[in-house]
Length: 162
View 1 (cartoon, rainbow, N blue to C red):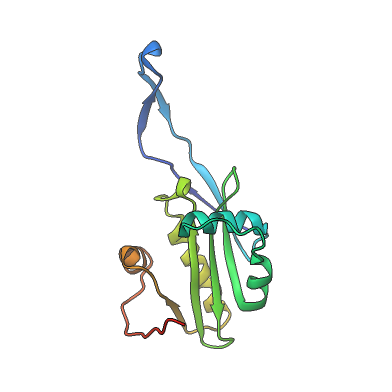
View 2 (view 1 turned 30 degrees about the vertical axis):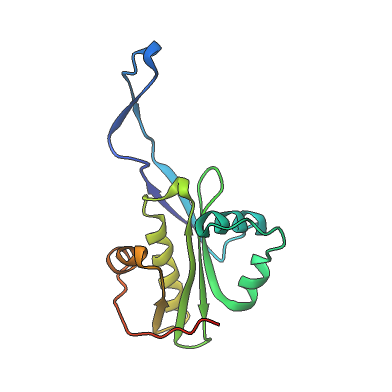
């Protein structure tokens, strides 16, 4: 199991209301994040995370474990002391090509490098499985995340909506 630490925020913040003067320093402690390749998860927690990330109502019948077991090379789960904060699915063709699907980080855990680490771990395991290429597609607002933070490069691709 991999462990990776990130700070919630840097430096010192102050808390307390007017009754306490609001001047008591509070140092954020590092929050440990556990990353696990093909980690265990509950369908409800993944569906809740997916619904939050993609703006839909959770579907109580979603069978994430069945889908991932049948169609994926693997996946990476990220957990903090509260629960699941990230997930990435690595689909593949069984040979040279792997595909990232559903890179998800909980709203409460964003901007801490969790998504980048999920991609790094996914890439490492795809490489170990013999894949030569890792593909991803994404919405425009995620361009800097995938190109700058994760190291993907632009390429021509095509898409047909079915």
